[in-house]
Length: 147
Ligand code: DQA
Image (cartoon, rainbow, N blue to C red):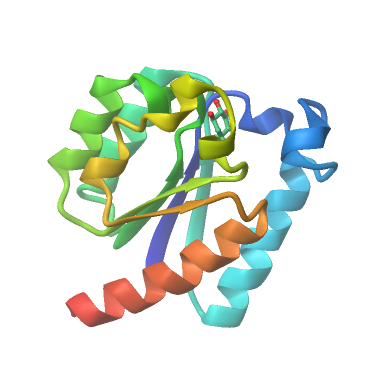
């Protein structure tokens, strides 16, 4: 099983940005955690991060034909306003899970809206970095069920 994990703007700054909200662990640590969990589940993961909307869209479009079977995406702030990212996600029919490290519903009003969640199969919010492990388990079940 081949799963794409995508992280949007500023997620490469984990451990540096607002540690009271996002925690002390850095982005490299998150990648290691994802690789470990994927290994336990027997899933192949490609982990991709970009600060650029167009690059994220290009990677989603590439997933259409590169054998990717599911996408787990933390779009960062693009979640709240990027119709272009939403259109890219809705272009491909493989399962998609949106994830947020923080509980966006406890934060500023603008974070309560997700324009991308409606084109994803599910959303995981507020469980810190552990949410990526949860998303991998959920994705595995979803992909297997679709087979
Ligand atoms: C985030 C929440 C977003 O509102 C924010 O812009 C981020 C991170 C999260 O993982 O909690 O960059 O997606």
